[in-house]
Image 1: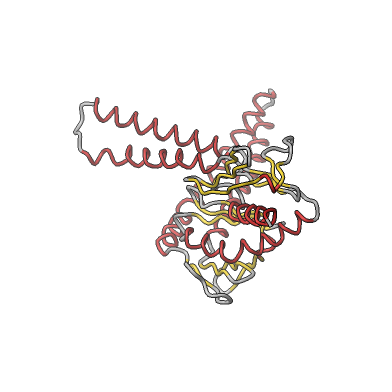
Image 2 (image 1 turned 90 degrees about the vertical axis):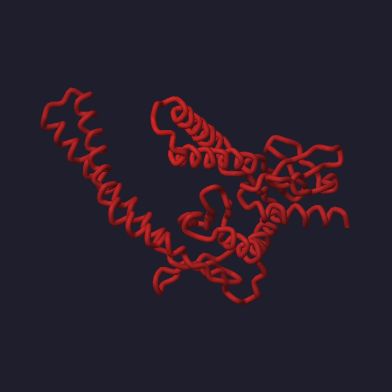
Length: 303
């Protein structure tokens, strides 16, 4: 997708997501709030019981913890509703705008600390000193949004990163902490559960209608997709003026020793003159910016 310069590109929140979101919030927010209050109140009553307190202390802690749970659940619901209340995203040459009705929340590209994804669930951006922006796959056309950000946001971010590197700073490009482990656990659990449900379908003396396999198939596909994402959540690199390294304690590999940066199914492979390979997975935060900085550094070293 090629976007004309100076022409803002707009992405509407999917109509289906709007309708489902409204219904979900009308039905679920009161239930979640009440459930939070009950659970927190139960914790308070349990603490009173452990302390050996009487009925007065038990009721007091139940009330206090219940109010805390109620307010906490309500705050979470309101915050999540605000996130989902965005109905349009506009990407300009220098900024991203989240539109809520007639109002816009602006995020300048040179203020974005990192972009992550698209992952299994969506695309995530972290502006400096502000809340994380999460764009869910079921609500937004995240692949198209990512393409627009690559064309407009990444160059601005790269300029800021180059300035930081030239000032003597070391920049780290890695996936979110433990992302690969989380994806592995979720994927394995879902695949195992789908296999168990299929086993029950073959063993139990019930009507073996193929329609009953819908849930096991869905769980298997979701689990397999999570496992496929594991490779994209591996690797990473640190970059400074002198070169790159994998870990902070490793010696720096100077720019002239870097020979090849080639695409691999789940990201990029950086090769050195002695045949060493460094993986950079596509779920590395600021993946596109990292690749751009590596290319420019290697090109400068070859001049």
